[in-house]
Length: 155
Image (tube, rainbow, N blue to C red; front, side, top):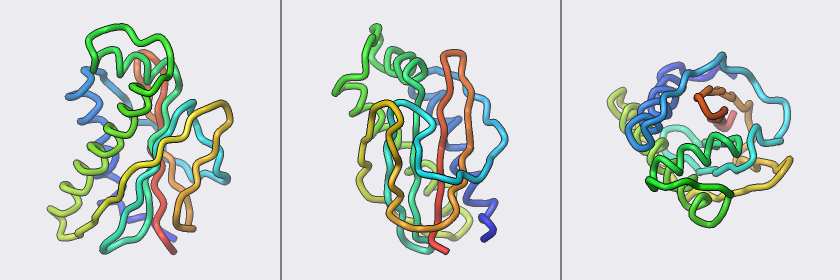
């Protein structure tokens, strides 16, 4: 299965844009790769269902140091643990990144809708995408750690 580069690039651009504008954090995308399993590449994740012209999902996973720095910037005060506020922020960031990506994709005449994100946290947690298919992971590096965007579409 080949991923549509227009869709992948839209998610990549949305992640960089949203993290920069909402949290004032610069991020640098790394080389995308296919994931072989459902283990999360971070300490907290959110998964959101995507439907419409394509059926799939997006997951956003953060290392603890990365999400604490991002949420500290969002809230304007230090965040020292992954708590309910951090989980809510991960869900909101997932919504906004997915929404920005869908807007960019719609400019290419591909219409997608999104569901409500599900948050999962903890060491070695798993990401259960609602659709089967190859999982493309795009790692991002920030000054405070890494986050990853995973995208999968039904085959």
